[in-house]
Length: 147
Image (cartoon, rainbow, N blue to C red):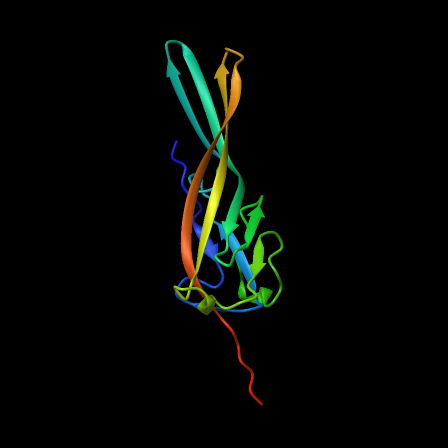
């Protein structure tokens, strides 16, 4: 069973520029290795074990001191959403990334995988947890209005 960190989706996209005060959408691809469910079976000596893993939460560290905890995979941003905030997993920056030494916000997404296992015919079961990380850097600028 291969469990990976989130395949990060974020607006603004890495390489692009976001704007202070605009909604930031956070999401991950819903693949078996990036969000689950992911199921594996193993047998030995007449005993079979089945394990199913799925992400129970993703903790996003936004690079500005803010942490966002999401219990869904998030909603990918689409242009027709405009300035609407994400319905389930989002953030708004209040300062530009130029306030950091690198000029970018380093965003880290940490998935907590919950793995339920059970022994077929043995009546035993349990739960394990695994942690996986991914990260991206994004630029957020401040808009200046002149009269």
